[in-house]
Image 1 (cartoon, rainbow, N blue to C red):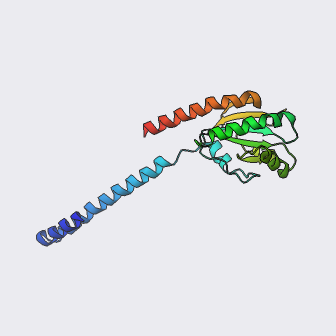
Image 2: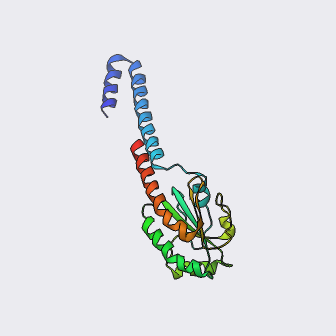
Image 3: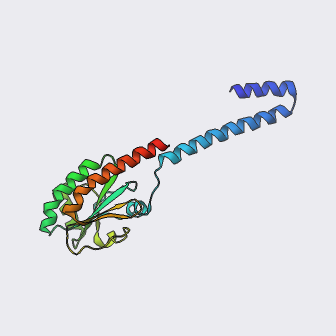
Length: 193
């Protein structure tokens, strides 16, 4: 507003060159404001890796959309008919509840069940609220390989690099280490901006 009044005064007192000068000054201020807004938008949106993009677009059988901004993913191969899988599932659900708020690690179930209904019932039995996909769809996840026995889990980073791969009972406790590492990375990223 002050710039407009100043420009009007200059235009009346100096002649025709002043409005052009003022228009250039107003444009530069607008450009600076637009650049600042763009900078904020870029800072708010996290950089996505290969795994983020693929996992974020997986078609889930339970309607739970995978977190496409997680720093680490644990992909659990499991099935409703598997005794050890049933024994492991309460621990997996507990881990998901522990980490879901921060959004830094995501658990994805890759079901070995023959039909989506059985896989959904398996999750519902344990009140699992994490994304679930059929095994054939999980093959799109970077470095996914079918396990020889279940329950089997792998932990990958946002780019798809395998960090852990093995029996779910051994891999699941390591998720805490990756959650802590993701938190430290997030704090470092926030400090660097």
